Image (cartoon, rainbow, N blue to C red; front, side, top):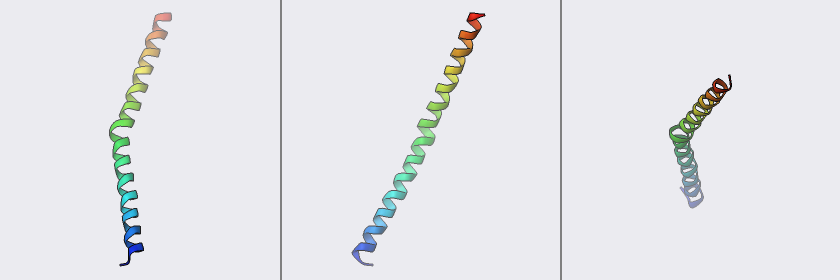
Length: 53
């Protein structure tokens, strides 16, 4: 295994692990925050629509 193969392997590992941790971050923080914000906004809109009646 020469240096270029070693550097290519390290680059592959870096890209793979960066993608893995990005996926974990999105699934644990971003998606629940997005869903929670949407639910709260819908509740507020329903409450405002009910108050206008």
